[in-house]
Image (cartoon, rainbow, N blue to C red; front, side, top):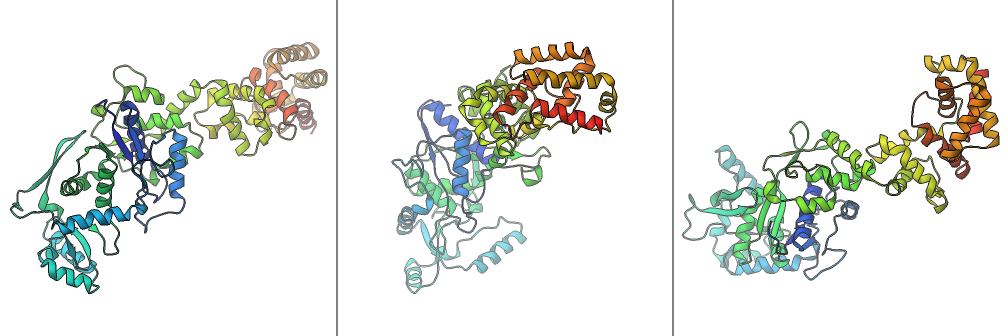
Length: 508
């Protein structure tokens, strides 16, 4: 990778949510900009009014910001090469198109959509590449101008073959950073439309005008755009603009090898964000699509490590497989690497979001409790949507034990269980355990008062407080119940209330 500062761009269309494949493209553009001390341009390609979705642009920008993929120029931050929405750049496209028209490299096309469809169908039936064969390109320019002035609708088309070009052998070549030299036969491109009959620039023409004006050095995008590139190369050359480098990333596919789609499950950043995945974990999974660190280096990477280690030279040309199970594994490793302070807020927000805790759980006086929550859930989750399940014992009311569970039924019927419960209630009336030391003292007091020890003692305590014979470590759980019932009395039932409810269940 060249270390000269590179200007790169990510150019989403606001036609839906940010897809994982596009997020991978944004990530690699971001890495290249940061590696080279260059510039990441965010350009919104919003000329497809038929597919435009209200709110899609803001959603895409929010997802990029959540991922930490910041840009240096764009519609919200400005820059020297704006505007950064294509819908605000129509005058630039008209000016460039008129230059090519005046120079004879473009012409007015009056063919109707129906006539063009018929031509493409004939070519397809004959086994040829469907394309426009340039009928209107043979019109006298003066005649074409008069028809246009008379109000006849027309599009502007690019003249692919010049006088002297051999239509059988003329080629368009360009270099791709991943694929090397790429060649297309010029005659198979037809004469592409630059400006539609309604006056809107086509995608292929607009992106060339924009990339040239914004001085983009490297066009890095998905290989679904590979077939667009020869037309774009011709536009660059005709406009006498510097040709950028190209790199076309392999497509992202599901575990069945098919293009990643809704039938594979979640496909957008927003969906994974809503499930509580960490942004760094999702970035980690995306960067490993078709690339990996060298040697024995770990696949668990921070964004900084991605910047240090990534190289386009080692990106595979084969399609990449996105495996949700691998994302889960990576996300779990990233959660394990968080400090208690880093995990405490998102874990608490997960409980607030599903209604288990009040907003006050984020107040400063609950900071120590939040750290305890982080310790409780950290070992058992790989995304934040799993926090409520992992922390469910905190909210158990007591007494709702499953009598069909043989182990619980046997425990509730034992005389020693009653002794432990009464000792628990007596000891809790003296001092509810709100920290580890108080919990240790509480255990000792219950054992001394009841005269019971071992498995029966601890299973009774757990069943009384959580309704189950297994679950999170009591050393972490009980202090959280004790302190949480004081901090959030409407959300976390107290230890005495749980014990009393369990005794009532036994008594029937």
